[in-house]
Structure formats: structure tokens, C-alpha cells
Image (cartoon, rainbow, N blue to C red; front, top):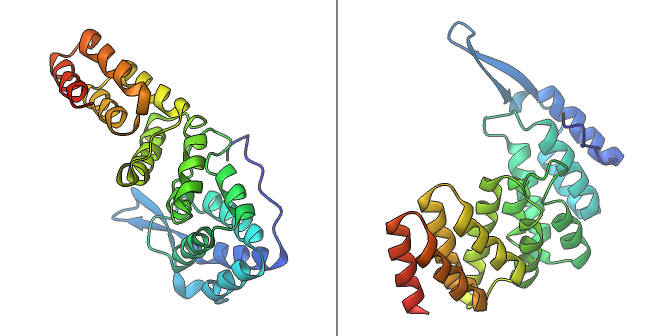
Length: 232
């Protein structure tokens, strides 16, 4: 467990669901025991946790989110399909789709954990919310996320929102893209950053593309940047 993790206080209903889920989890060995996984077994549940998760979501969206944070942290090693996890994901997405400002604020704040990593399960649910709110909060999360893979996951979601609507990124996101276009080790990542700049970078796009045309170490990236710059 991360030293920076502090589990939220759960309601009695959430604690009952969590306790039952703990009883459903066990280790599975393959072959002669050299390969092990953690699985959840539906038949071990003593409660109808899917129904109780729905009840929790209806009773309090804040408690549902608190439970989801604890659940995903505790059971992150479970690798097989699990109805409880699927229903929790559906409930979180349903709450986001309602667009309640208080819940969207809470969930947006929780997108990045104490280790500066993206909660991918929450991102998938959060994307069901109102496009304007999601677009704004994902850009806020982007500047807080540390792992490169998490930044790219957020950028992919942002592009999916912005491109069909003709929206542009805010200045911080555009600056991050310009930086990725310069410092990313892989040429394909630099190209991807340049393409995002060209599509959604707004006024910052031309400068970032021009720098790549003049200074990128890979001739293929320089050529691609020049083509993107000509299209602006």
C-alpha cells in the first residue's frame, strides 16, 4: 500500500459490501503453482453486492465514490471478470452522466491519486459526464499526472472530446504538448504530440511545429511537422 494512501471513511452499507467482497477473493494457482493470480469468485458472495452497490449509489453519490476508491485500491490485483467491479463502474458512470456539479467536483479531484498516477477506472466513468466539465477537469488532471502513459491516456480522451467540437486546449495543455514534442524519447510520441498541437493547440500550435521543423533530431519528424505547419 502506498504510504500516501489514506482510505476514506465508509458508511455502514459500504463496509458491509466491502467485507463481503473480501470473502469472494482468493488466490488461483496454475500448473505446478509457479504462476499465481488473484480472482474473485461469484459463488463466495453471501450478499447481493450488485444490488447493494445500486442502493449505495442512490443513497449517496459521495459515499459511492468513497467506496469505489477503497474498492479499486484494495482489489486492484483481481484479474478476472467480476460483477461487483462491473456494477461499480456502471454506477460511477451513471452518476457522472447526471452531471451533478458536487459529484463531478469530487470525482474530478480524485482522478489523480496520491502517487500522481491516473485512476484509469475513474477516467472511464468520468468521461460519461457533461463534455464541457469533463474537458476542463481532464486538463486540470493532466498537469498533475506524472507517468507518461497516464498523460497520453488523458490526452487521448481530451482529443476525443475536442476534435469533433472544434475546441482548443487551454494554454497549460498546449504548453505540455509542446514540451512532449521536444523531450519525448520516441519519434512516434513526438509526432503524436505535434499532431495534437496542430488539431487542438490553438495559437500555440504554430510555434511548437516550427520548433520541430528546425530542431527535431529525426528527419521524418521534421518532415511531418512541416506538413502539419503548412496546413495551419
